Length: 572
Image (cartoon, rainbow, N blue to C red; front, side, top):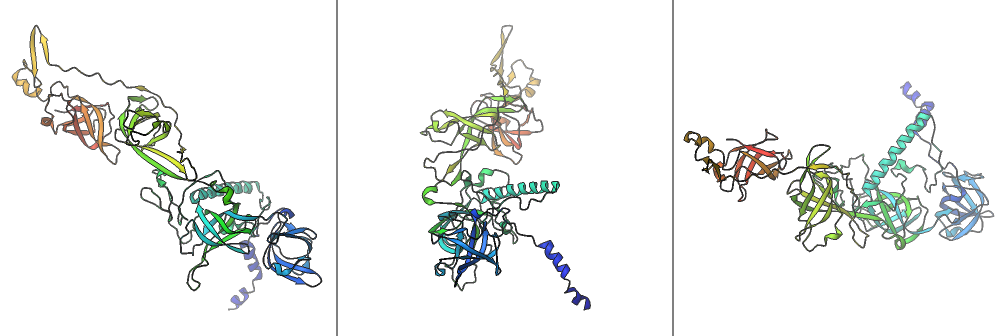
């Protein structure tokens, strides 16, 4: 008990803890009278002295005999004297709690407000702010809704629009990495960077980054993905296809496979957003001021938080001059199909068989003017990029050139992906993709077609081949020879692959020519085994005929990876 009583008087221990935990606020390194902002919270007259305004200096500095402006009253007064804690002061600067005495001013004209250096506080009709939702606010934040917005000592109605969640998150992450790198550099050099740069702030705290409001600059030239409303969570990219993000919706969901979202844990703050505030009544306030959005029309007796969001003003916005300057876009995707392949080439750098030209369909109507789409970039599901060269025929087909080649097969999808800006009256197509460097190769000549053998002339006598058996073949050998179809040596060529795509990326069906002639009854050979010469481990069976020119359909249950033009062998 004695030790416990003694511990309560450990003043030095308390001071050590306070010094280790409390950090001095960051202030203006070079206070300037040109950006003096003072928040007035009380105003009263003193007989024989003048009118005293008490409050807090938000930025800059002030001295006696300097002029200050009352923006809301459109008047200027000279500072007669300064006091801090009932003592005269020669200067006040950011963070100081002070009283300012002016003469010839009616105290009834102002109770709360802002006084500042002349000309520094403008009347604004709107602003762009970086904001964050209050975690305890239960409702959603919808773009276009009206909120009660408090700036300084003024509260007005404003129409609010939210956007830029993903872009601002990337900007903050980049800024944090740069600050971490600079911090490590300064620590290595043994320098203290605190107070090294002047901070032109209009709010206390200097570094309100501690409150989750980083100081960011708004870039009018930046592109922003369209959002319907405030996102409660940031969508995550699963790495398959970034373009499938689509338009971000109210709850943070997106059009992507799996629909994965970042979960909002109890210790994780809602994401930062840009917010466009259009005030119904113009207000006087400096940039960088703190702002609070509320729903004060909520039932007073309801057990609910009425503070919706908080943030910081970053940029002025005037609907008359700035409307349409914010560049928001939506992602669009059109899907076509490969209907025909160009000549095969063997690429020089990796020896793969590719096509530098393919033909697509199912993307345009036959009456579409293709000239406006020539040069647009297209992409395969493997990520190979090409461009539309021209139309092909009169049925809406088109020709696509791939500078680096493509391994696409017939029936594979072709994607036309582009952006469309909301404020573009022409609704033009914009693409960020660029064509890859050319990867040349040499053309693979197709094998020469064999002539059908109807008979063989020897010594003036014709030996007729019927049903695949020579008339002079000994009867004992005719049974073995009958296993080989007419005009075939048991080797065929893959002319097309089709069917479902398995998880290993292979197709299940190959169309083969050269194993049979037009006269052969392929149904009699159904079930016979066929192997790929280039990949002998891939084995299939004949499933039936394909067309009327001797082609057959071969089923590979585990898939086939051989390219078009490769050879297969039929086993006896």
